[in-house]
Picture 1 (tube, helix red, strand yellow):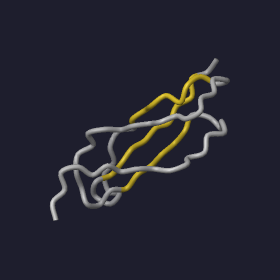
Picture 2: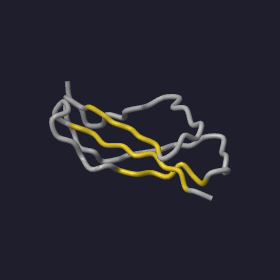
Picture 3: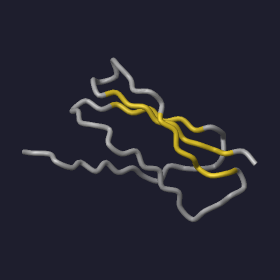
Picture 4: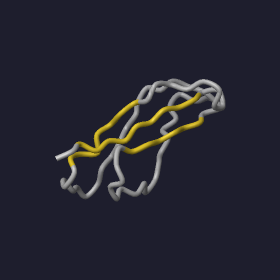
Length: 75
């Protein structure tokens, strides 16, 4: 079976410079789970985030939502 994955990169300056692609597994093809949670931690801080996502195959895996946990922010 083939391991499917999602890759993610980001820009902290509005899209002028980009991070390296970071990869997380979605599990093997044919392996089905109720939920798949992908986490990317300790990305740093910025005010002008831009994100790119890509997946390894055309498997049916809709993105049902996204959450950004902003810790340590001051008013």
